[in-house]
Image 1: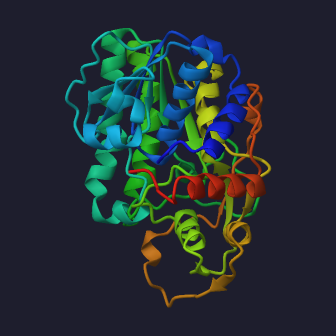
Image 2 (image 1 turned 45 degrees about the horizontal axis):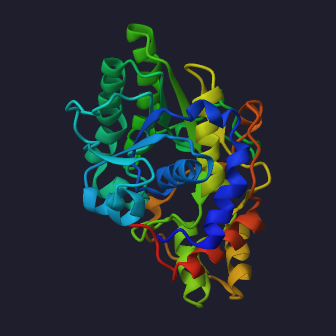
Length: 356
């Protein structure tokens, strides 16, 4: 994805939302899953800080494909912006080498495509457990200051009612459900964070993002928000395959990235924080309407007869309380209407190109 003028201005607007951001200046931050939707936005924020604020942050981009990383980040291909590639496979427990050391680790490598949970359930679980374990081993060897684990709102399971989930709310999770490997292994990853702290004294924090949308979506992303965006950009109808009543916490990708950095700097050790914008809690149908309105196209409801139902999030209500996150001093920048408009503007300016 080209960093379009609109997106660059969004980065500029987002940085003030990170409390004590200067504590990251001059540090070395290793990020797994860096070409994914969420962590690529984190990298973009750090790149902005290096270019505009002379932050001097070394950004270690960890992943399997150096080619994909260079395609996503022009500074990596040019040897600029403090970007360095580190080979890493999230499904392996092999030791990871990070020459020069690491101050912070952000572990975001995970299968975030619901359809692939079903096709590759073993790899999905390994990335969430073995991949995280490898990051803790790296942090331990490097005497890193902190590890941040990107978990998921799916750890909460199902509960009745429409009240947002607070960090200590847990509902029912059927561990034998065919897509349960994802939320179950995310739960295990959170327990692993606490275990490494107890046994080895490693400082860690956890974030639980809700439903993230934005211009950093990948071509392979088949989540509803990504499909709506593609339909709207093409000028076609935004087609909804359900009644759209599911209640979700939506968050613009850069708000999610600033929240991650806020927790990295200010979060309390061994604690979990929801990532949710209180001004962007809405139903799936309302999101579809907002995206369609931004593109000037209609919404069409096309209810299938049970097709692919196993792929979808089983939670009818996955709205998240944001009080704990906001108590750190984080303030979201993009409500749902503004976030959708800025996403569409950035994608149009970059030719509608999604990240690799």
